[in-house]
Image (cartoon, rainbow, N blue to C red):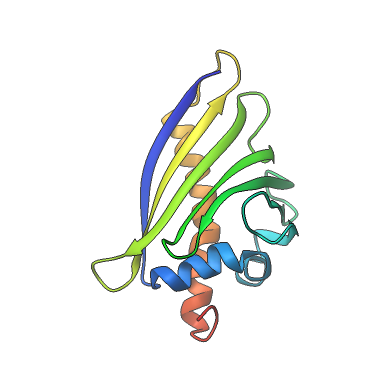
Amino acid sequence: MGVVTYDFEVSSPISPTRLFKALVLEADKLFPKAAPHAIKSVELEGNGGTGSIVKINFADGLPFQYVKHTVEGQDKDNLSYSYSLIEGGPLGEKLEKISYENKFVAGADGGSVCKSLMKFYTIGDCTFTEDEIKEQIQRMDGVYKAVEAYLVANPDVCN
């Protein structure tokens, strides 16, 4: 097994606290409303904190039916969240799991920046290319931007 790491950042006009609340604390309720084109439902086993299991069921016609991840850490005060994708989605032939470490910080323009570290755990001698990583990020970005647009359109949500 090998590990491929990848750092990236995403800027947003939404404050870090509000974005953290939307993408982490209230994702099970918000994702299907904000991104119905992509997410059918979110199932939560546990209280959403460390050790919880989150299953995201995707809309019909998308490449994957679902993904399941386990919450490895959540710090509301420091706006950080870590989890590992453990089932579904892109896992299988090449990947055993994908781990994510996210931190939401204030942006220079008054919005926020989500700083992410992704770790791709490959199976055997398989490789995972930068193009494949960018494809994964692009899939996540669609939901991220839909949530962001929903928050802009609904300023009272996640305050």
